[in-house]
Image (cartoon, rainbow, N blue to C red; front, side, top):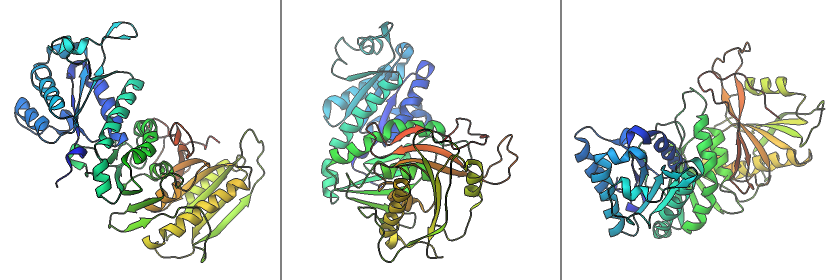
Length: 440
């Protein structure tokens, strides 16, 4: 498949001996931000290393990053193959972005800006004009942001030609490689999980640190519409929708695996005919009210009932929430994509109502919905504080309850300035997660 060259991947050049750890962290941040990455460990085909690297660098990359560590001076491939070729591409093409991660300090806390020239055998001043960032987390985040802004600026014409539509793909279950890119403006990928059901906790942290860039990407691209493809865990789907709120993006279209389009409305409201019904609800009396109240919403939009995990949540957290509501479709059939807008609008309106009726309570949301609906509901939840859960039926150590459970995964607030994900709540132990309370 042919892609516009501006959507090509970024090439990472580094020394394995002392640069692998920082490179891995950088790679996952780039992927979470939507930038495809070419890295030898993931994407190098078999054959002679130097020849294949020449081929990869020369064919289809939109930028490069040099990871400069002390031992890079001993890498002939980096010094004599990759760095010179990346410099050449950067000097010949102003759209080719080049960045440096510099892990070398001349004094504690002070970056050695001369280290790239010295260690890579270049004349003094060669890398002076290249953006250099520290190798710590804030430095890597700063470099990712700068690369993303440069990348999107080079795609404004492409977006304009595509009916002012920014295209975004997302996957949270596949193992990311350069070959799964789609030619979209953003190809968001997070680390694969070791857990059979739940997303990677480290991947969610990467997403938390990059998802705040998404609204500005839309603005900088000049897009009036966003088209989303792919699939993801529902907590990520909701957060992605929240990052594209109706107050900033007027039109969002989600394409499912069958290529059907699920199109969003612009405001939460309950239309006619009503698409949802209240299966059950209750107003409770919490034993203590410390801080903001909490309510629970089970948005259950699949045909066959599966209430055990939500029932378990209620039995374990009855005294920490002030109200709960179980919402379901009025139809026993699968949802029609053409009904997506009214369904998402009504779901968002009902979620907002239970929060407002309980002193702007935090909503603990349990979504059992198609991926597109979860995205579209998320974008209509402006100002609502939400904790989003993931369903898990795996066996947890020390858990005598055989029922599946919902685990708190992300704390989301669409209007938050630093990004819609304010906290990753999922436990870090992915192989055998312990039972968790809601942490309300």
